[in-house]
Image (cartoon, rainbow, N blue to C red; front, side, top):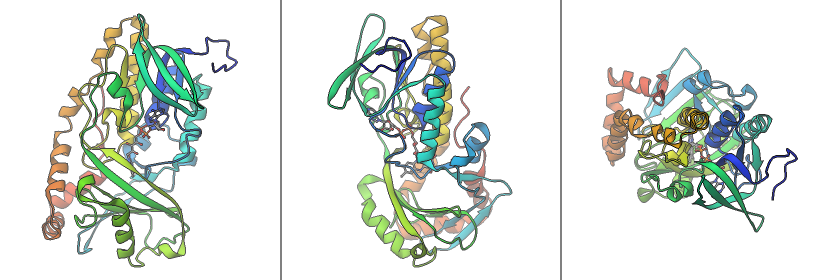
Length: 381
Ligand SMILES: Cc1cc2nc3c(=O)[nH]c(=O)nc-3n(C[C@H](O)[C@H](O)[C@H](O)COP(=O)(O)OP(=O)(O)OC[C@H]3O[C@@H](n4cnc5c(N)ncnc54)[C@H](O)[C@@H]3O)c2cc1C
């Protein structure tokens, strides 16, 4: 039993959220703020350990969500797109378009906000499975070699791209992936101001791109690609070597390596049942084109929290059936189409031609829109 001094039944909660990434933290807090009892579980001991993401937040998220400025790097207004021959197309905006999150600090800060809202957090707790009861579910967890169970009315799967909760609830699972790997450096001098540098080169990053993100404090050097056409460690080493002093990485120090799988199938259709629902990567809530997941995480988690609160207000489990990815999916078609197009360009010569086309209007305008338009994820109504 995990006693928390609150006087409540320790192993029962209205809602159990599995996974304290951005999606789980956002959903747990919003639900707890309405007075419902929420337990948040994560297999990690510390939510700030083993960060797997670059951390780029787009303007839309920065404007719409209260992200703590102390956990964000300096603003970035410029994106540079490179062809395989390293011809550069520079795009800039008059606004602050991106900020790189200091993710370990951000996760910890958001966990503090969860606790202040009444969320009970159980660290080092690995979700093992769940079974239905007459009134809801029993959630099975392993913690420190011991088995624990939590009774709940509702289970939220915020357990990432390879969600076990999705499988246990009989919901849809992700099927299409990119793999990303990056190194994080500190103390690298900025040559030309903060920028997001994207390298389109199927030889280095087949099906996606390689990147250098520099905000003046941190430099992230990474590669992403489709898993069957690509070995991430080899590609990252080759890409870093090919930068050939351009970013003065030698003058800084390597502090961390990050990586993981990114689902790019678009939001899954079936993401809710009468006893549970999925948020974040578990729901496939990632832009299939840019592979950015934060904006989607934040918006879908907010919608999930609204639906959960309505389910408890009305006492009607059927309310959860309104939580569906099908409608969102239809609004993803252009991004899925563009992603298929990008993945289909397999030769460096063909990509050079694509990049040549991007230099002339209206394609240049299209590239500008992809980077800077306030439309990373459909607004959820
Ligand atoms: C290399 C890389 C770079 C990326 N860069 C960006 C970017 O710059 N901008 C952007 O918008 N998106 C980016 N993404 C995507 C973005 O990181 C994800 O979409 C987002 O982090 C998903 O958040 P989440 O909360 O759904 O899942 P996660 O952050 O994966 O959180 C899942 C949590 O569940 C826990 N968990 C899993 N299984 C269990 C279990 N059985 N029991 C208990 N706990 C469990 C995990 O420990 C974890 O804390 C990137 C992804 C990768 C891999």
